[in-house]
Amino acid sequence: MSQAKRYARKQAKARQRRRLNAQERLDRDRRQAQQAAEALHQALEELGLPETLVSEIEGRLQSQQKLLGKIVGVMFPALFGCRTPSELCRVRGWDKNWPSRLLHALPKRSWLKRLRRLGLEVLVPLWRHVATKGAATQSRWQWTWAVDDSVFRKYGEELSLVGHGWSGQQHRVLAGIDGLLLVVVIGDGKLVVPVDVAIRRPNPVGAGGPCRDKLRWAQTMIDERLAALRNRGLELPPPVCTADTWFSDSKFMTHVRQKHQGTLLVEGKTTYSFTLSDGRHVHGHDFLHGQWPWRDHPWEPWVRYVRLQAKSPTYGDVTVVIVDEPGQDRFYLLCLETTLSGPQLIRRWRRRHWIEFVFRVLKHLLATESGQVHSEDAYYGHLVLRLMGSFVLFYTSRVICKGRLTMEEIIFSLKHYWRFVDMEPLELQALS
Image (tube, rainbow, N blue to C red):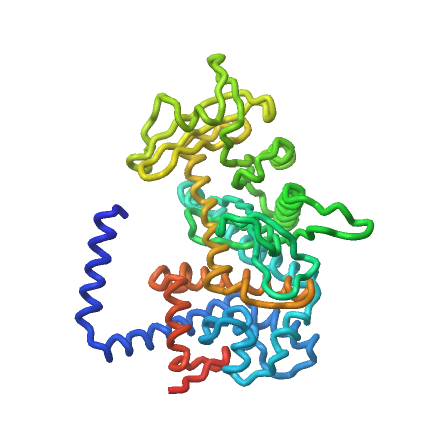
């Protein structure tokens, strides 16, 4: 949508809101909150979380009461009008130690197994359904693997998981827990499925040190998830993986190419040196500031690109795509030599930003940093539940609501109008 159309649509909605009086707006927001709660419960039912996750935790806690409402409360404290699970317990009259016992109920391995199984149960039937369609439909439902890391700031008492890392959001080094996330972006963001997560131990002790770095973690996660899909009988095309500059390692790129016949696409650095096919020696800085024979992007207006074949002393034969678009700093993409065209690589790179969207949902809407737990197993439960929560929100807004309600609208309406929502399975009783 162009800027002019977006502005006109925004102004039209603003005029429509001003026409409504206060009572009509309140009634509309209450109906939207009830609609969001019902859609959220439908998403939980379709994903099978009540039958699997709840029963497993109930068995370990030896509790006979329904836990779905409390699990959703731990995942979405904002949906209950609260910021943290402890505040949620005060509002709902629950035992203040309930969230801690809930997160301690399963060990770390069980939490990770739960998340990986959820990813497989979503991806496998979806791929089998698309595989029977034509080539045009399959091209719209391509899978792009995206891997990224983020530092979740940890307040209060520091665990053994807490170290010091660079936060791109706050642009400084801070004390936190370094998490590595692997997601599958289907199409142009039709669905974003988290398939694996890992937490790096900064200073391990004993025979296990030194710690596995991010590159080895990412390589292991991709290998295991692709192997699990193959064990399910899926014949996947060569994967296209995207990652930021931190993962631009020649061994990692070569591993993806040799073992999976895939492509690892990263953003290049200004310090890299290359030899072009015509014999010229250039650096990454030249790609960002030099003059090049630009070509117009066939699918995106005002976007120009250059696709070059080059040789790197570190990577060998590579493909370089320089991207220039209005209002953005010029950048270039790097991967081992491939037959994919420049527009195809740019489109795959655009999908990498959906992983940033997932992290934003985790940190902002689902309040990952506000939860305080006191053991490694509990923190894995804390993080995995919120990853499931972000997926449920995304599934609700994109699949069930079909874009009529965004994730932000669902969170906002339930956070501010939870007193008027009646949904017994989620323990949301209308108080008005």
